[in-house]
Length: 245
View 1 (spheres, rainbow, N blue to C red):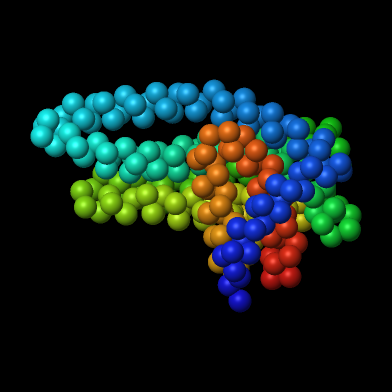
View 2 (cartoon, rainbow, N blue to C red):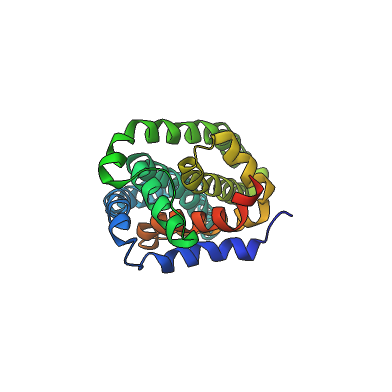
């Protein structure tokens, strides 16, 4: 069984609903604060860069071809949104990774009714910061070669028409791995185990990751997507991946 795309998408929205649960509110606060600070400061920078990039490109285009800006703006906007959405999220996750692990732990205990023998309390989470950063860097190193390939495609005429699709698929894959890693890491499972578990339930994982990837590119929504995705990935782990691992 490879899972279900619609069911995978649903985990993100179920996760968002659970954020209001009294037992999770405290553990949502830190990741949410980190996201607001990082996304708030970088969104303005990203929009400014996009505007400058388009002005530079259009200055090299003959006036009689100026109409193509109506084609380029959506294409470039979608592509940069997917790229920056993942990169901004990666920065936020590196900083808040131990607290996301703690949120995943408490969410799993709420979902399953069973205690998770992982971190207990914010003090322990702070002690896990170096390990969490190393785990995030491992994910980033896994992502960069694939991103470099898609980036090359982005600048090849004709082929670059499929670049937004490739960026989306890569973002969906990485977002599923990124967030499923939190509950699996709480069970001392390796990064290789995470990739294998996501492959086995590919459709559910890509549905979930695709929804997260889209939401990270939407201003304001991206402030809240990380804690919702942590809880949503914990639902995916508890209901589908745990039995397959």
